[in-house]
Length: 212
Image 1 (tube, rainbow, N blue to C red):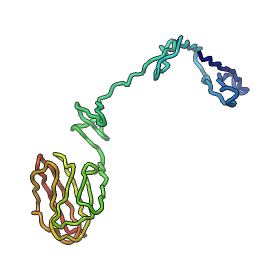
Image 2: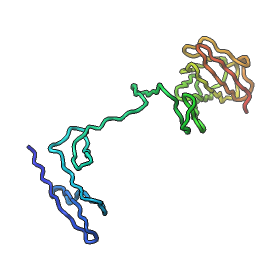
Image 3: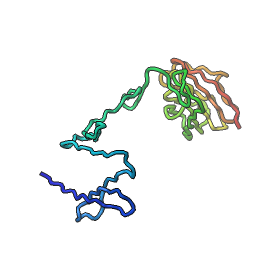
Image 4: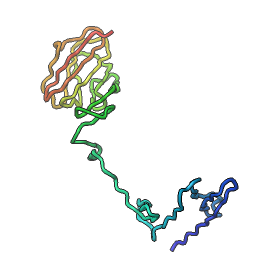
């Protein structure tokens, strides 16, 4: 059995008529304390009756509104979101950001920003990190690998190199056809901007060349 002795001291302040209830630490550990203080003004007397025993782990002390305190297990509450591993999802209704009356599955009132992922000189691009990617490699007929192009997604690839000796050829998992407009050829001198739209197993690519 562990016996805990609490020293309770009523400290009356000279500038006020109220008192603090102070619980001091063991003298061997110092002179610090914790305590309770009544409000400056109380409308009526209140006495709280403590529970007869300790609660269980994570329970909190609650009142019935009549001065009787008891240990209560707090529930997590309700949420329209469902947690599934590292993902959450919402199957019914619409979601509004900046609007209280969303009219589509996702309704955003305001600007949406997607940071650019700059990859350096590489032809392997991972669109899971951002829908906007940049690389300092050039177009020379060597195949580029574009990973994580999802059905229905729109993506942007900036080729930030001004010297090209062949076309930029793309490949990606699950993609059968790549359709270019204009036709895929060697870009002129300057940076190149590619916009990619995946629909099913096809990717439609539009591109603009000659940025200097």
